[in-house]
Image (cartoon, rainbow, N blue to C red; front, side, top):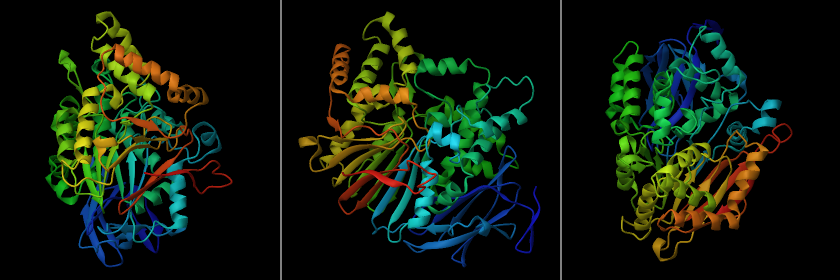
Amino acid sequence: MRIWEKRGETVTVALRVGPLLRHVGPTTATVWVETDAPCLVRVRAGGRTAAESRTFTVHGHHYAVCELTGLAPGSSLPYEVLLDGAVVWPEPEAGLPPSTVRTLDPQAPTRLLYGSCRTPTNDSPEGVVRYGPDLLRATGRRLAEEGVGEGVNTVLLLIGDQVYADEIQRPMRDFLRRSREAGDDAPEGEVVRYGEYAELYRQAWSDPWVRWLLSTVPTVMIFDDHDVRDDWNTSAAWREGMAALPWWPARITGALGAYWVYQHLGNLSPGERERDPVWASVRGEDDAGAVLDAFARRAHEEPSSYRWSHRHDVGGVRVLVADTRCGRALGEGGSGERSILGPQGHDWLDAHLTGGHEHVVLASTVPVLLPHAVQHLEAWNEAVCAGAWGRRARGPAERLRQAMDMEHWGAFQYSFRRLADGVRALCRGERGGAPATVLFLSGDVHFSYAARVDGGDAAGGTRVAQLVSSPLCNRLPAPMRRLTRLSTVWPLRVVGRAMAWAARVPGSWPRWRVEGPPYYGNTMGEVRFDGARAEALWYDCPDPGTDPCPRVQRRMRV
């Protein structure tokens, strides 16, 4: 416990992580914090509206969720965080604009910021050389300078790899070296246990610009593989291989437990949180570590036992955030059933992929529509792994799948076709009034691009597109850039189609074209919605040293 003097008060408890502004509605707003000791947390907005909550504890770490209610739609209120009555946020010495609570206005235009794949470097010179500038940090600078925007619903979607548990930076390596005992069987350079994940999140979100951004812009999150481990749930063979490692049970338990606390809990609306059985359980314990561990183990072993996907209606935009990792069906036990969402995930998506909204957005960490050569190759590989070219080809195909990360929607053809059928029905007005656009927002691949669907009669008047913004801060090395650039050239597209045909992969709607060359710099994506109009932008920041404010690298009408 730290004690210091601040504003004439003796402060005995401090913020460890946060505050983070998470789920917001027209009249409610959620503020999440981690403190360094048990305490009473109070959030005071606009000098009058207040909410408070006592912390709950998980493996010796202390958290609180404060829910402000009775707010006006479209309001923007500066707020303070008090711990045991002492103001600890904002920090005047940081020199940053006030943190604000922002509620949604159902009648206002909407702006979605989105990105994925971030390893924190604080824009150190060596970090910029290897990983490129940090676009999450740069976006904080941009919005502090421009203002978040009045009269606009602004939401940040962090869609995967918020932390890299298997590719850690030097500060995290130093922490593991200090905290682990001699003879520990955990892999060197990888995070395994809950407390290690807690430190990983602290380091990822402690940069002052990132901290301010997350305190001011409502943020929605979903995991991808590096939040747990590279290639997480690529296939049944991958799961079997990991299960044989002695440290894997602690890893998956710590990863999913920490994800629930640091990321998923803030995605839930007040009503959803009160109905969540895990929330009820953790608040009823002196230390809920064992309770959360049991939940995490079950969520891994029985993916249908918990739903990680979530829905948000932001103005006229329906945003569906899909779990494409934990809920996968991988054909375990020889069942042959493979699905990127799992049966319950597809049922959830079908139930919410409905009309009556100006725009529908599916946030999927992995792209639905890839460059054609890769899409065909993944479909071919799935068929060969299933035996399309005989038993002897299955082993080499599985090794190729894991080596080349063939784990996107193209590698789950049942899921791809089911989603395509649902989108086509939505565009035809068979699920209620057809939206103006259906957009897939994705990351994962470490390059950015747009793909536009050739609608024709199947899409009616609805415009359908894939928008990818990746990475926020983890630029591909030059050799990998050259290799992935080949995936967009037409000869490989022809080869890929021939291979898929030879493995008897059926063709299906949609047909699409990738617009322009991919971009390999770090980016933050943005989509602006106003009535039936939608515009996509990608921001980059080539030199954070001389020009720290991001600029528009590309824009397109959707």
